[in-house]
Amino acid sequence: MVTMEKALFNRLTFSGLYDDGENFWVTMFRFNALFKINKKSFKAEYKGSFPNESATIPCLYIDVAFYDGKLYFAPHQAKEIAGYDIESGVFFKISVPSLKKTNESARFISLFQYDRYIFFARENGVILRYSPKDGGLQYFDCLGEDKDIRFGAVCTNENVLVLASNNTKSVLIFNMDSCESDLNYIAYERGEFSGICFDGNNYWLSPLREGNVIKWNGIDKNCETFSDYPKDFAVANGKQSFFSAHYVSGFVWLFPQNANMALKINVCDGTFSVAEEFQQKLDCAGDTIFLINYLFATVSGNIIYAFVEKTNEFVSLDTKNGEVIEKTILFDFRQEVSMKPLITKAIAEIFEKTCFVTESTISKEYSVGLSSYIDFICCDRCLIQNPKRNVHEIVGGKIYEYVKNLVITKKR
Image (cartoon, rainbow, N blue to C red; front, side, top):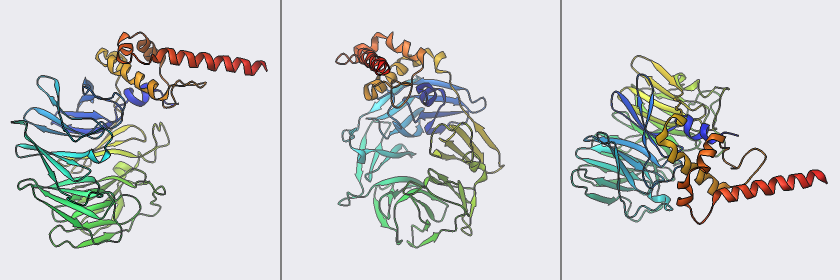
């Protein structure tokens, strides 16, 4: 059983990253937090948690952009767009009236800074343009009547956003200057894409599950398929093959989610090869924490940053000089006093959702360290937050009933 501390707090798992040259600003995948990580020492500094959001819902924010001294965050499972003023250290929120927690079609998939605006792309083909100067927020519905189309990946090409559908053969092109859009259908027998990137001439789309990689020209609309995968390449039946696709230094890099290989494709001849720089972590038989492979990948200049969920490790590759850096970024949350309210809230949420007793745990998702639990039960705040249901009494009662029944059974 993975402890809550190890799964959530001790090791930092990214869902979004911004590189300011000296530091990484990263959002967490498994809990509500923003960290600043020094690029030389890899020392992590907790900067706070997003206000009025869950402590434990995964992937609250999925991407990060920077403009005029502030960071902006695209909500995936969060209730509002968020921002952070780097100089003052203050979080702020941008309300989106149509964004509802229960409406998956309202989720955002990415955001981009262009000109004086922040553009947010949503799964349902709606693009939001936010003006940091005056707070103006404009909506552009790019699908019209095609409401069944969903998008899961996006890339940029100068002044356009290009979205790839994860349930159809569709590609949406949105001009960030004119705010006009063009919906395209790829002339290929199978659809559903997991990633998209631009090599300067063509777009490359990775399959969501099994299938070919597509090279598509956005001008003449011609496409070409590539399927010469390396020997022994495999995808778990019915599961998502690749997490994302990125173009850097003459190659399209494919990061596997449930496929067994990290790959790169030479854009000149379309040949596949194993991306050895990212493959060795997938072959690891050591301290495996979770089941899927890559959870996160992004590009900054010539450098690829990626996160391996299987081993909870951060990997970076400088594609110019071949330098690879691999780090398990640990964080001793017990030494960070400011994190105690977040940890208390996380324990309360876990108990509220899955409160029952077995021989080894009081939560079916995680066990909780004794020191964290003592902090939790000694904190009056958690009782005030949930006056209708005293979690401590429920847990205590279940422990009593479990032990009583165990004793009676043994006596029989």
